[in-house]
Image (cartoon, rainbow, N blue to C red; front, side):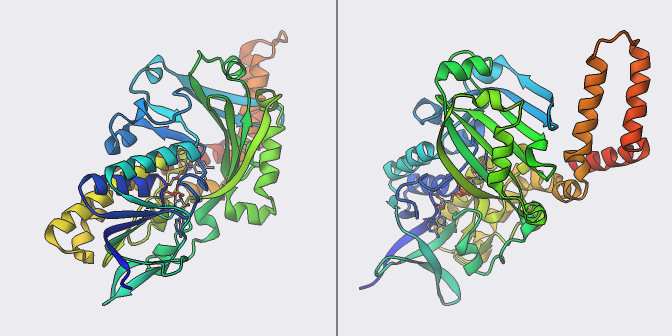
Length: 432
Ligand SMILES: Cc1cc2nc3c(=O)[nH]c(=O)nc-3n(C[C@H](O)[C@H](O)[C@H](O)COP(=O)(O)OP(=O)(O)OC[C@H]3O[C@@H](n4cnc5c(N)ncnc54)[C@H](O)[C@@H]3O)c2cc1C
């Protein structure tokens, strides 16, 4: 029997793949969306903050129907030491008004809903099916082989949206295994709490949400972050670090998460919560230098599979959706020309290059390496900031000017002012 032929096969029903499949189906193409999970989202992990504008670009008006948790009206960054937190945050009423800037989501619900929109647009969803390799014919990618019996499917073009561990991109020769400093391991737990308790603890109006990102002691001084995001009646709590850092320090991500949950500044936020789910996942952290070749004859790579992620700003779903959209637009053009060669698909890389995706990855291309080489930002500097704040805010009859001089002397004793100036300038250079 001849394998079934599609105009496009999309592998992976995460935000990247479903965006591509949805737009291709809407444009009238015969498209299959293959997902290894029993349903889209079953295996997917994200903090997760979903950004409104990039999602609107793919599926306008989604917020009226999608299963969203809370609009994020407040974002915080906490620099932790063993027993203190130096806090910065921003809250805006505008973030709580339609169209809200971002929402917390639970991927098992959101991805399932999103894939359903692709099905309603005409895509054939094939869940519970692992794609094992690409099929090549006449030197070009011509389909995929799945783990099912007679599991070959053919297509004019295959879109690899199979996430950070992309089997397809590797099989097509577009990249090798990632190195230990090109991925972070993050673990996440969902902790159930009543909605009113969440609103009280995070100082929120009913239905509103907040996020906290943790640095410093949160990752035991390693390059990484922790987070808490508020869902409707649960908190997403997570923590992770570069794989190379975890290997170097022989730390497990589970240990890091336990450490964060038991931190004296964090514990009260979780008190009385019931642990519901525990999951672990990789995040691409290689930045611009790790981005593989994005296309070959008959195939495109999108989302995490292409290392499209900005860990510094906790953005990945937006890169995934917009790259999925660019892939769909490129395939629609290729179909009009009847040409799915690498040359015809190269417009995808041009679109990515001209967008925020490549511009942001280029902007931060040296950041990860710089901070990995300067662990002071995750250890000594949080301690210096905390000691300075404690000294300045302690009311003990010492005049404020004398306190300022004392703080300066104490800082200098811990790390020379020259080193601090050099490291801060270096940090500014890699994030400017
Ligand atoms: C803990 C954590 C927190 C994060 N927090 C945020 C956040 O708050 N905001 C944000 O924007 N980003 C966040 N990210 C990043 C974000 O989750 C990713 O960038 C985004 O999910 C990438 O989408 P994707 O579709 O490319 O890949 P994925 O979401 O990983 O989807 C890949 C899909 O392909 C399927 N698949 C894989 N291999 C195969 C195969 N061989 N055959 C068939 N199906 C396959 C998988 O089951 C999955 O459904 C976070 C990531 C993690 C791990």
